[in-house]
Length: 125
Image (cartoon, rainbow, N blue to C red):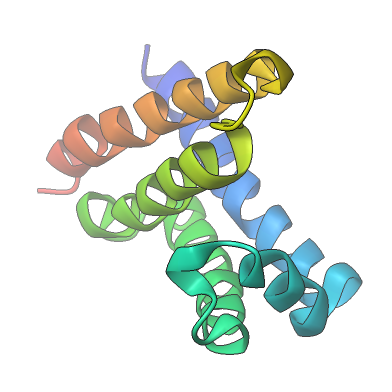
């Protein structure tokens, strides 16, 4: 069971690290800020939120891979994925156009990060 927990932690760390690095080097801060400017919550300073998102994903992914302070660093992906699910995944104007498979994948990832924060942190003591 310990091996599966390690594999899960590595995959969850890579999920955040790779998505953060892709945003940083492929999409760029301008592209991410353009994506965030369409969300009312972030429209007042999309460039600031873009950098915060990219750095949060990269730092939390690296910390999870390093098995460092999982209780705290697993919270960042939970927040990112909840916001992504609510504002990008679910189409409130037309629920029929919502990609429910993407929403379910986000929920699976969120639940894994919650488990990592709870049970992965107990191994650190």
